[in-house]
Image (cartoon, rainbow, N blue to C red):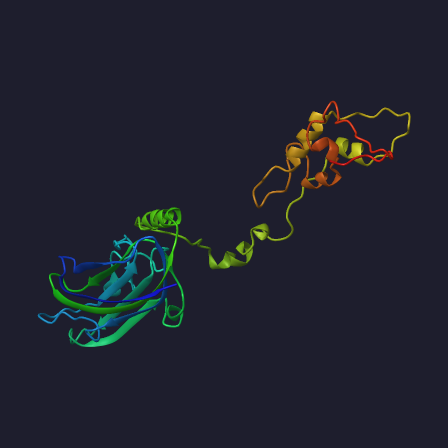
Length: 311
């Protein structure tokens, strides 16, 4: 399979809006009809560090997010940053774990309150990290890549952005159906989610009781007791000439369906109204509960020696 090396740059001057947000994107065209797999990816900041607004004092943090994806990146409604207050930013790009993200890099600079031009601390994180990005990680089908840069700086600031990219791509020719389906799936994945909540929140005092649903209330799971009438049919010894209530086939099928009814995780298995626990199915009479019995079984075929032929 051929390996293509993509070298490109994103170089421009971005003017932030009234909220201090700036956006730039660049499209890289590649071959159509291939499955593209990233062997490695490297991004270099040619500015050497974070951008700071230099024409006036700006006692706040500045940050950027850089994306490589099959389709352009858009803002969500998710806040992000080191913490609430001055270190928090509005309108993050999509999470790095989204399927349409091939590469994401973020950088944050914590500016000094005494000297707004002096960067006290800088954080730069990448997904995937350097170790993972040196091996095959992601694949896509769309015949293009988008490099998207989002910045957060002072309002109405002119920010010089300079990034260089080096991407090694392995390409494999695929059929039209696979290529079309892959491109359509990536187009759907690129549709933005404004807000997402993928976790379940528990009170710290309840963690032990919630780690497995069966133990929500502690102790064993509740069990249903079988009714006396039903137990009589299965367990009681009766004389050969004693009268015994017979169960119709339809009634037996209904009972087994009730015993296997789905219930909540903190409820007893079976049907509480009919007093039919799920373990009653252990005494299942297969020939009866499997369904209606054929009125005329198939005829038997015999070989010349009298053995029954199996079909």
